[in-house]
Length: 354
Ligand code: UDP
View (cartoon, helix red, strand yellow):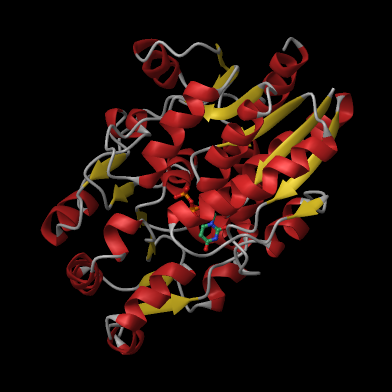
């Protein structure tokens, strides 16, 4: 089959890096990069590091509001699909690129495959939640990371075929984490001692777009025990700058700000951290795999199993709740929640049966 894959942001490059190889062993893939993330630190570095093939098409339609970005993606994808004439479209996760790829393909009468289907935060104010719900209802083949996501889809009576394959980001993480644990250079570069620093990421619209919430986030960071390493997503950097908060954070003793990091370096810093604080979905999951306690800067999560297992605590932006969560002892048990590192092969086997 000729499969057209639509990707556009950092976690999608990582997911595609897991699936693209096994997919290309059996099918032809046309890789389309929408340009949703156009910053080199969020895009190009992942292609080179993770060995993902160069995109066949680069749409360059990043920037702007969610609605205008989606509109430009749809307008660009329609003629592209007509030209490329794939047998199916493959999309990942919950971004504007996911929804645009799914909708454009469905409108063109092509089957849609959605990897990481069925994740739910049950919070429709999140753009990601709207994207994933709509993509799931457009999809013909829904490939799930866990039984929970398959149950979410059953509850919504989606019409496509649902299969639990495990999580494709886990495939990549399990491959990279053993070396990452031994990488002494990464913490040393920032003057950090393994096991004695916190790693923090934050970029969700709900945390950084509203200046009041952003100030609360900065207060939380200033309350945390030092040192805290904070690789700044470009969105977060821009919002901090706009709110006049960047300089104070920059000069704050014990807070180390960096550019967004490449996957190998970030994974090394995650595996060796005392704990991770994040509003990222992917990072919650990777912290769990690395057996590093996670404090999630949100009121809910799609990765509910990590909370149920006692490795993740939801604190929103409440500084004292974050300190309480950091004081907890990690559980003795660490069940396998999202598969065995072979999810990509199961995705391709399911696609074979499409
Ligand atoms: N990541 C990275 N460098 C960084 C921060 C994150 O390589 O500086 C990786 C991280 O390991 C994870 C992914 O990016 O695999 C998560 O992406 P992001 O937080 O942007 O997206 P989300 O998971 O929230 O959709």
